[in-house]
Image (cartoon, rainbow, N blue to C red; front, side, top):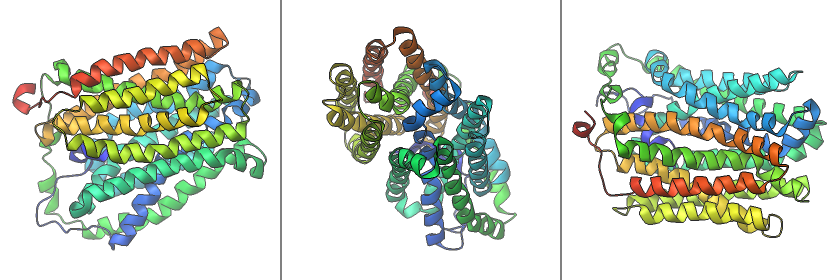
Length: 422
């Protein structure tokens, strides 16, 4: 579904049974805060794609440089993620989330400052802020709603996709309403600041509920202990590669799908709506595929289904991008939501303990984000070199084949235990 299935061991301190069930003043406050925070976790990225042509024309950016606008956030998500657990242990998850929202708002604002340097610098800051949320928020969900963790995980994941969908659908209308792409992008800083204000009760509640006796209990972190051999285990690499390519395909399509449709004669408004619909379809995949994965001992068939959705959708963009746009958007949406959700589920299902899940999660996220970062800029460079989309999209089909092989290996009924990783 989302990162919450695997990030919880490292994202929130381990507490004793005597710890209060809730830290925030009221569960409703926590729920509203979580929903608002998760709305921010993809919106700032998805808002760029429908406006990419105007942004590139404004600064005279090449296709390769345009691809960097979506590559930099993904790259900095991978760079930042390993440091987040230390921040959480030192300052507490509530403060880290508040910091992330403020940094996110600053990054969005920096992106519209005059000069292309600010555009790229803001993208880096946004990526770092999203990494803070990616690692911290799932643990908070599991900690604060222990009896409804599965339900809240679904709500949290859905809210993330809703944020991305709204950003994709509203970017062009807000561009017209605010007199340019700068106003459209800047508007998402308001959402981050409102979310930060709504999150303040969580920070205050955490301060008032903090007890000195809890510090020693949360200090030892066996879930973050190093497990020798993890980076040499074939299963770990199969999972990391599968997750990385699923992310690469998703972020590349987020970056370029509207532009592909534009270049084949579709209006920007229609392309933005189709792109928004693609994001909306992700909800079904994100909910249903991980649920199905947990009900089967081997997930090979689900791997084939998800990779197949990607392959047919990408092939459709090559053969008949405009005529079958809604069909391709449906398949690609299922692949984006279900493929990544399946990767998250596989990490949990292949792990024999929370310690292994934590280490496997960290490895998969680091490798995955760096793989994913190659997609948007690589496709942009190929498009610039070939002046077309056939070769870049065909390369994504090759990536689908690699994902199929890695995913079938990761989908086998094999459990990675601590004794194996030592």
